Image (cartoon, rainbow over all chains, first blue to last red; front, side):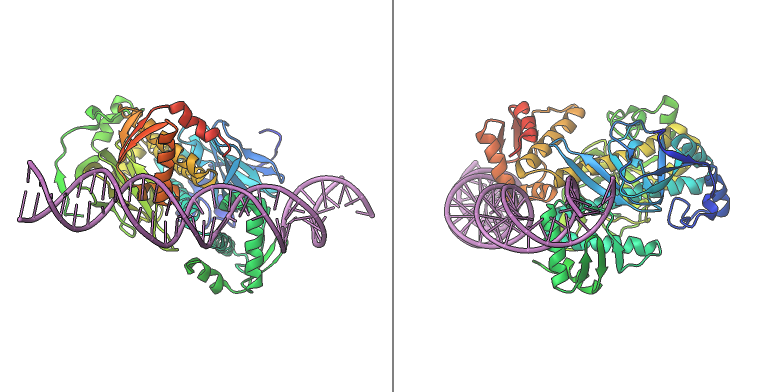
Length: 240
Length: 240
DNA sequence: CGTGCTTTTGAGATTAATCAAGCATGGTGG
DNA sequence: CCACCATGCTTGATTAATCTCAAAAGCACG
């Protein structure tokens, strides 16, 4: 993917503002020194650029440094299904380890930057460094658990509950990053939300309008303001 | 879970009939010697026994040696959602690595046996043995990809396509184990199939009957005979 | 300051859920 | 070994949730 603007290495993991949320989380200072040799480069992407596409050879992992990504799967039935949205601190490319090539499509939804880690380097360093090995396992397992959450979202909820879960999840993750949990901008379209939640875009729009009518949220285009987070949580418990 | 019948170690991985389908797949002979020290014990479970329950401390992984399992998630909305079925050669417990405790429920659907591998042993050995480290990563990544398949199943298919996908997937996996791809016994109830596919049991039953009417399969209770696998595959492509 | 894409909203169609009844199956005890 | 009971399965009729089709309004970008 040589069309990208490649920046030389500037910030070490040990001084990165994301270090507590990203791969370095929980590593000791000496582990971190090992890790820092790992990030071989950074890549900048413009909105709409693909970072990973199906069939692409796997040899590296990415950590989102800034921006916003979507991960989608191409259905054998036709069409794409969005499996997740990634924000800074989250890792991309883990699907490729098993077969040596990627099965997913990863696209930047806004101008973004990722840190590149060669898998061969990771494997080398992990075998010398227990903490880093453990952390790699944790990152992979976290992805397994995250996908289980998506399976539950799709498998056991009504439209209102899906949209509520989606908003609460985004809110949590933005809060973890130090942003407002109550106000944020949706980086994706209604259609993309629908693809993720297995709803049509009209249903997403209607559900958001309904939440607004009930004074749970305020929506204006892509900006969302969660007015009453308890009511939003209550939607999950409601039977309807 | 000390109520289980624990058998002492009898068969080494290197001579296990599942070695090409299980954790040992792709390892060299010397890797295998390392691996064999890993399987500390076997556990037998009776139908209905729980192997893993939510909140349980994570310290080991399991490989299915014989039998049949279901993995389910408890929904915050209430009720359970089945996230997958596991047959011999498949690995259980990977969700626990990230937080040190399990989030899933794993239950035997028939009398079964699993090989137990302590995670601390795995980590030790993997750091000395590249092949095994790589294989562990592959196993975890395969689980990520498997779950992506479930997300797609739930997110982009109609009832007929879901049931067809379910049958084709089971057929493939049984074939890999050396069993018939055309005839097999469903180990789970219609309700459990429905929970996995996000359909009600009546819909599962109706869809199976419909496939039978169209001479795609023969069904008699829990036994399934795939009569025309091409027609079954064609269901996936059909728009309706 | 259009022009095209996204979003909203409405009305009607469709899929699968729900409710309901009877039938098969498998395990149990006489 | 058979009868019985509990559980699981099938099938039908109706209902509810979401999709589809349609039209207009809002926005964003060139």
